Amino acid sequence: MPSKEEFVVTPYEVRGRIDYARLQEQFGTQALSPELLDRLRRAAGGELHPLLTRGVYFSHRDLDRLLAGLEAGRPFFLYSGRGPSGPLHTSHLLPFDLCRWFQERFHAPMYLQITDDEKFWVRGGLSRADTYRWGMENLADLLAIGFDPARTRVFFDSRSIGVMYPLAEEVARKVNFSTVRAVFGFSASQNIGAIFYTALQSVPCFWPSWYAGREIPCLIPCGIDQDPHFRVTRDLAEGLGYPKPALVHSVMLPGLLGERVMSTSGDQKDNAIFLDDPPAEVERKVGNAFTGGRATVEEQRRLGAVPEVCSVWALWRGKFASSEAEFQEVTQGCRSGALLCGECKSRLVPRVQSFLAQHAERKAAARDRVEGLILEGSLRPDGSGPVVRGDVPLP
Image (cartoon, one colour):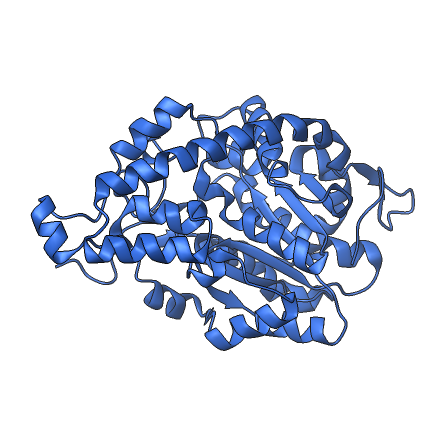
């Protein structure tokens, strides 16, 4: 039998069958308990996002402290990012779907980071032109989710460096190579761009506080694989005079091929539903997707299937069940054997196709907003801070 130790979760590699309880213990994060979710529900003044109620987000750092601050009249801002190396698939939307919900419920400013520099440093097959082009495409996809343009701004690293670099200097001075090597496992042959990147990823967590000259709490929804970056950030925060960012972590949804993570490395393009997949491709991919079904119809009717290992159920869970009632119906039908895998797939296909068609329309409209939301500027002559083009939304 495989050892419990045989899984790896870092920002640069996720493999093996992840034991999330053990991972939470290793990372030192806290469970999103029913009591904490009830507290968040009361603060939001309505129902929680399905990603929270269905357990896709399972862990946190300091969400309780952030809610305590909110209850005391201290609003927060949101931050999440994307490393552009290719087209987005549905699992890439998990942190941004939740960010949109937080923005709507709490009127929170949202800061997106597009790390085209980092992908150039860590993905050897990509040129700077590639990562920039994918960054602009990915950004249009993310804005199509429906963020409020008045409360949303973008750090596009290669273009926003003038407003980021002075703060990145302060962060980088506090980070030593031994810390980065211990957290990320970098060898002596790692290029120095990837080593420096942790300083750049920390900048949006502190930037609104730095710019405003007052403490503004930060909340980061992200995959659990990104937590190591922010452990470094949190360790630096108080020494730099900024609040530690709070985090909520999602699980890694399985890919269509039965992989434990929806990875698209190598030639595994069939492992995910991409946002630009045409209808026929969606039907083919879902039809071939790995399920938790039994060997025969008779056996499945008698024993039921196992939704927790099914990539199709993961799509219902993460994005496509329109209500909690529908999600429970699909889950119980799968578990009892009343809903067969072929029937479940046939029901899901038009739901995915409809979402992608609507997303394409929203993305076309979002392209007109991209340029106006990217933070650009230069350092003041006295070096005290940046002069930013346009306004900066703050809580």
